[in-house]
Length: 265
Ligand code: PMM
Image 1 (cartoon, rainbow, N blue to C red):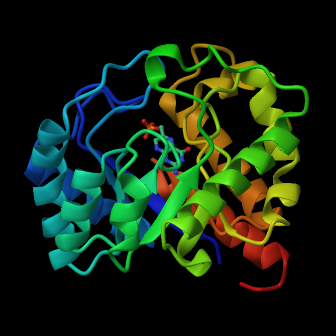
Image 2 (cartoon, rainbow, N blue to C red):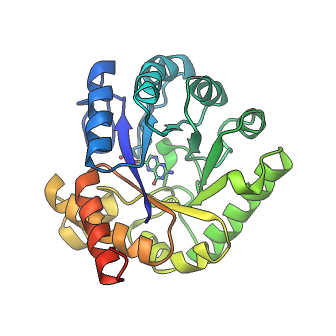
Image 3 (cartoon, helix red, strand yellow):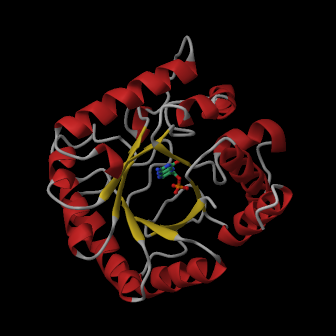
């Protein structure tokens, strides 16, 4: 069964939850609910990566996320820390996080890969071509799947060279990161090729802008959650190790249907 990574954003301007879970207690309560809904991992982030979002300092980020990491770890959750900062990653692992999820694949902070190498955490290396402020400036590809594959392989090589065992590495094609509408669909269509590279693959489509291509630009959260559950099933079918979602219950049910279909229920 695919891992379901539930999103706990402790930010003021996330893609979609509008900072509703800004304070520690509410973020912990949200994480608790996602676990009850079936999340096998909770991904805690304190910096929005929404296109155009401004960066926050590592100190502000750490102050937002560390109490939430500690609180959810204390309840037995498997926690992932969504950060591009080595200092936040190391503090979060010290507080019990088991996975470092770096959307920049270790490119934003030159200390990240070495810092993670010094821990026993796993790491998600996402495909990324630059910060949110100019997210789409480099969104030009001849063959988006081949280029994502090649660039992810280079990040895996860099991580291994920094001392991270290959078994600790998870890759992510970075839906919505440096990719325009149709390019995201092309990546998803080629997901089996990315899985074929042999690493565990995480896929994050949840509520993302590219759904506007099929749902229209003003589809509400419920419709985008349904679309997310469908892409999560298709990702699992293509061999993804895990999916990263806001609405865990919807994706849990969709994955259960898929397992029944495959005779594995
Ligand atoms: N997407 C966002 C943030 N972190 N991490 C991984 N590994 N993969 C993703 O696709 C991803 C991510 C942006 O979404 P949000 O701001 O709605 O959480």
